[in-house]
Image (cartoon, rainbow, N blue to C red; front, side):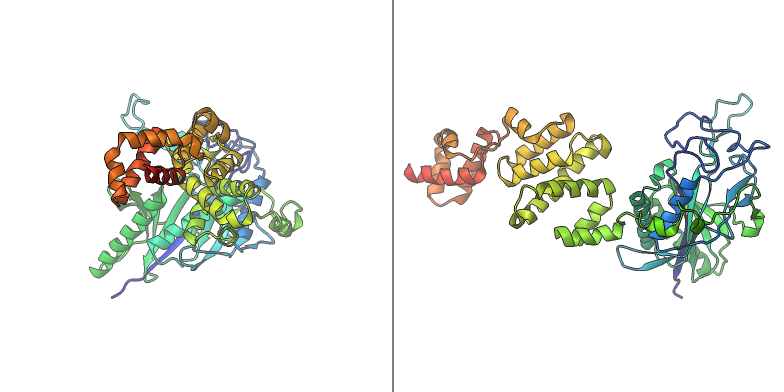
Length: 489
């Protein structure tokens, strides 16, 4: 019997706002000191009242509109009741019956398959538990500590239909959704910081589903789903049943492990939040969907197509650039500068050179130095000037790499660096003649071999001259000059 996987997502993303969801405590993911960004409201003290963060609502609506969802005329918050140490109120303010956005879809970039979205709603995040922190309690070697800095942070949840059929499709969907969040500037979506959390519901042949949690990377997501499909398949082939449960991903053991039996919605005893008014986006000037549509930026799939058309890139080149918004922005600003200097007939070559040096050399240096793009001392204007120098043969490819490293490490204008460090390419025959004659005198056998028709000897002599000039000589000029001088000898 063939088993067909059906996979759906529940994805949580912490929103990028100044304050928390229902209070004025800072929403600062970089705060390392525990229990600093807290107040009576997010700590659930008696008598306190929540106030809706309108900026968080706006970011959810923008996400919904970007994905083609329908903004609700009427939305409200509800209390989701459960007791856990990281939930200070004893309930979570969330949404259930009346979410902010219904429907929508997202197309997988790899296959063009459309994945339907069920809903997008808004809630508050929980605190953070730190387990096994021994040494803080003299009575026990194992304790759990709670940090409430995250409690109350705006949290968006997206739920999909079970339209995903494989681990690879699941990974593609998650990566594309993270791109959408970053292009909209609604979330940093950094999985290592817990700002993006993936929960996959996996079943075979639309049978009992198992929820997978504790997934901290896209590669872990793919491995967890692949393992779970095989685990369920093995159970069914043995005549056993698949239990409705929540399983975590054990990265060390490369397997899913049981966490708890799965709760149903009635277990949470949802009821309307009495302290918050309903949200009516169409009646609010700042939240009106028609106004928000005009604020939508260019989205990843739109930019991919434009880059292919406008810059004549291959689909895989465009996809690589779009996968990092900082990279694609830097590329486009670089090309904008370049096109002021190069003619239309040289555009393709200039774009190709810029793409090559950006995605290999510059990106490699960024990773090597562990830099963020906003820390980079190289700006698109200077990078474009370096590309222009390469295309004009005023610097060799070897010198260009050296100049770029200096720009990354010290900053500076590429033409000034080339001049001050002696890295400009020598293309004048009169400047190279002495170096050529010296190499010929030192290598009479290579000269004799070349005269006998051994072309590899010419390459050897060119290499020697490049070494003599420390890579500054233009190879084509050397080739021409060598041939002339040898013919005269």
